[in-house]
Length: 291
Image (cartoon, rainbow, N blue to C red; front, side, top):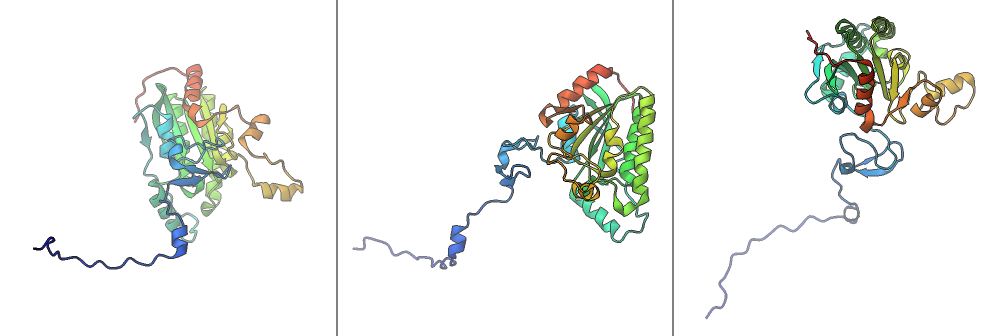
């Protein structure tokens, strides 16, 4: 009598040989950990919420324009304008078209700033937000034109304007045309100011070059996020020019606040409430018709 039935066993291929190096190297999924640029500590990504602030040192990671708008405006209140404006190649700079296309593919933006109407705490505002992921938010003809149009729209509608700046400076691929945007945006802000309207400049990391020397520094109230880099020329250029060693904290938001350039440093979690308080002091809640 047979106690066991005969079974057909399936022959399995032997497992691949795994080297000792592979056994000793831990397998970590991509995007699970990030390193803070300020304190150099490794952070579990789930410790960072939508504000993107380092839990160890308070460093503010860079945001996209869309992320910034989401954190700042009242829900579903942002109405973008001039979204299809796109740069030409006025200087025939080699491969500039390809550089633009790559940045557009990466960010899903036509250029380095988003502009539109919105409500913040119920107050009607024109908002411009620069995106450092698009060619380091360099200021070319489109950035200058879109910001100028936003300022002129705010003047026409008698509304406050808030501009979140982030930039490596003027866009070298557009030469003198990029530098012209400094004067154009500044002139528009002058007319906005003469109309008795409020301009809040919010400086984020980094804001340098032609942007810092024009509309970023012209706010009626100038705010900044902590530890943001704010300056015109780079540290090495300045030190080489004056033959002196600059302080370690030079061109930080904290240094600028101490020397009177900023009105206040505001953490990202407090930014919206701070803007609402400023708007409450200077503006009225009025319905406007856009178009």
